[in-house]
Length: 326
View 1 (cartoon, rainbow, N blue to C red):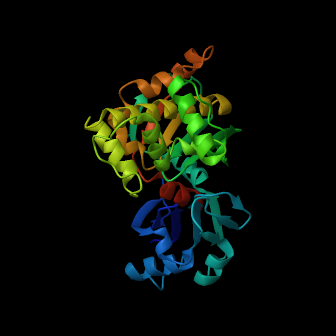
View 2: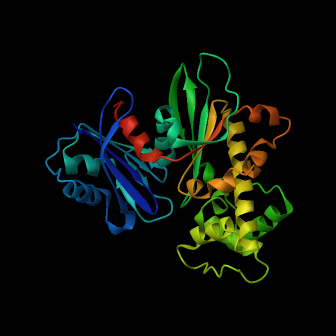
């Protein structure tokens, strides 16, 4: 019987799901996707979800939501859109004893221990330490923005830790990245990692990598421009778009390596978000992993770290997995 309500509240899309608690991992009973700003608040969206599923009289045991922004107590404001989530409002609206909010990457991290092999694409198998103990794990996800989080091994139990690492300073490594850094500083006053590794980051990289006409004739003001850029690059219809995706992939790999070093994520680094599954050929051609490992004197250590792309909706699953433990 469905008794867990979970959500993955993003800057563009929100996914809601009903789950049943099981021993292995929560079993999904129903899920739907919504455009976040089509609703004034999350309770209105949840009510629409339950009505569409014909479950308005459902008695829910617990609820948990991953939110694309910093969580302050029982409230969270999304970073990239004007949308606020209040756990108290949700609990009162649906007669819950309580509802929990997590940062969206914190929620995604809670999915990592229960993901199946078919839900992952391996970029580097690595050589996990041959011990009975767990090792720290990290996750980063580029989409509307860039999120980062990690699972710390605390006395043999994984505890997720949220961060706002996507808003840290972008560290340029090459001449072209320095050119991009200058462009971003001139445009925004400072350059965040998220200004590079996100949908809008692809658009700004496009501006730097095109000295002439874009052969794919991409309108950078179109909301679909990031997807169009990556598609044109994968189809090799425009050399400037190819260069754009190449820079994006290498910067993504470099930041993944940085996160592995900062968190000592010897248990693995997982790449989530909406962009990665769409550009798997580019992530798999070796450039991402070369940038990931190029951290002398620790390149050999990073060579042993498993690196995998998440293909499943890990944010929703992670929120449900956390919810099942409440």
